[in-house]
Image (cartoon, rainbow, N blue to C red; front, top):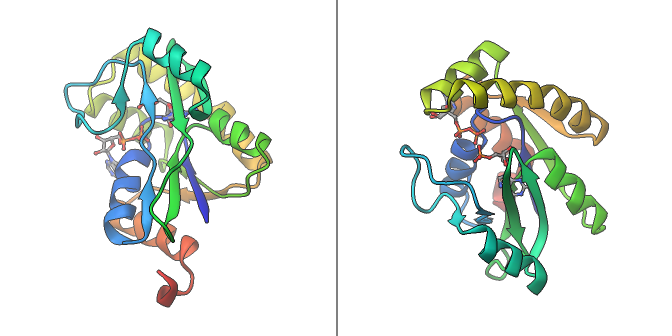
Length: 179
Ligand code: ADP
Ligand code: 5GP
């Protein structure tokens, strides 16, 4: 099974994705590549951080399932290579989810959102995004919500983190014995 967690910047997708893989033994989180510099607040393992040259070479080598340029930086998902019998979790933007659709792959799409745009802005500032990035991510969020609706995504509000993780868990694994 392929699961895509998407949503505007700062709503908590990354945090949720990490908690989901902690909670579900057979869930494998894909690690994206990016040319964005690592944030001070960010774990070194959050992405494979590379230069534009390294990224462009990897495009030529065909190692990406999808890639996109977002706010001046490249992001990509390598073709997933999970251990046998693992479900794959991708945490990507809506544009990336559309590219996955174009490969003809079927997936369950969860669109995570903050309770309000004010909460989203507070979370973005809290993790150190500058005001320009905050505004860009909020503007982008409006388009992403519309696209996600068109794609039939399931919307989940990340109000309380534990509650949102539980809601997503029960969407992915409605029958807990199959976890
Ligand atoms: P995204 O991956 O969607 O860009 P992050 O996972 O980086 O978002 O989360 C953005 C910030 O919001 C982080 O500082 C994170 O700790 C915080 N956060 C995540 N979920 C919640 C929540 N339910 N309530 C308050 N803060 C949250
Ligand atoms: P950030 O810089 O805040 O970590 O991520 C910016 C945006 O890029 C987010 O919307 C995030 O979901 C998206 N993103 C992260 N990894 C990928 C990826 O592998 N592919 C695509 N298309 N988008 C990604």
